[in-house]
Length: 542
Ligand SMILES: [Fe+2]
Ligand SMILES: [Fe+2]
Image (cartoon, rainbow, N blue to C red; front, side, top):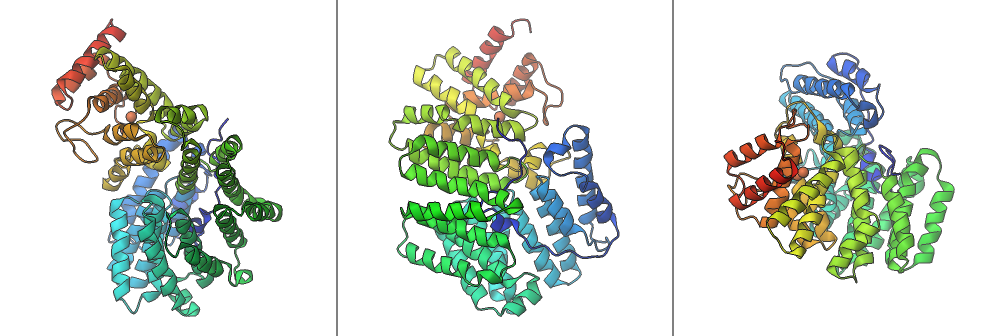
């Protein structure tokens, strides 16, 4: 059975996770009460049912307070951000820290403004940094490049920006350039002045940047100076290791070293390092590095043709990476999981690839994540959508191959929700612009995952399943939509509207849903006709 709500970390995630947060001691105001409340809970598992309603409302109330311009200073914002991060709501942490940053800006305290903005960005990088946040990160880098006074902040903001490009956009080449700039700017700074201005330990920041850069380099397709750059970064990550306080930084560097060896084909050396990590680590750190070790072991095995063993390792790494408490951890492990499955399925035909993924547990795993994360719809939704879509496709007399495609795409249409933080998927208080921007990412993310698996047709349907023929849909507002996509889309709407969920508090009857769909003019008459026949056949009494 897959682990629900386990909050363990994979190897490299910790580079982002260690925010080295220093907290202020002042004690008063709404922040104190909110923090006390949050301390009752340890993971999203504790927040089910009525507790969740209360939890959501308290977050909304606190956000109302923190956004006020005429409020008092609140010393608890960072601790609250950390708690919400641990409870699977890192995007709310982003909102709180950003509001706090703007508060200090309005008071003319630019140093505090930048400290809070850096943290806001770091929290967003643990959830899902959408386009507007990417643009914001980029703008900060541009401003800081011009600033002499606040130079020490530049490497930190470059790190945030590079992290978005690297982990979430997989734009490794540009990410590498940004990391490179971060390394060269931090190298030019005096450690003490860096610490005095940013409040961050110099060596910690240096190791954070170099380890992230190594990860990005490892995923970059052949670069002219890739190996040289990797060696240079490993030197930086390893230098003055004994002086860093963080035991974790040491293991992190070792994990990266093992991965470099594995990719170079020096598997024995890599194995030795991994064994050493397991032998020498203990307690919490062990829990953090173990999934990372399994992931690298899986890569080694896949590269050497040991398919079955490799899959065992990656599934265990996936299970241990946690679901909704830690979105970045899932993102990294899923990225590697998909990468490994793809290595293993490379030489198979298209149809065989799909069967391979299904038989080897990949889809079960992803659907399990959906079930745990999406409290309203869960995995049952995808199965219902699949059944409805296949029936409509049969009614509309599609060819066998097209019916197969409709079925597989329907099952996987919402898979991109795996990339969205748990709280953003489920919150019940009114959604703001950022919440919508986050939710609307799921078709693109789903398509991206499926394309990486070589499932291009399924990817296209996943990408377009919220598009509508009148141009009112998202992400693109396309009007030209394939019949197969429309079948999945109408089955999705039908099943969402007839099941209780966030949008439809009271489930509607099939006849009402059909009436509403007819009024909306968002679907072609052909697919509406298919739905009508499906309802007549499947729900004759209504
Ligand atoms: Fe969807
Ligand atoms: Fe859906």
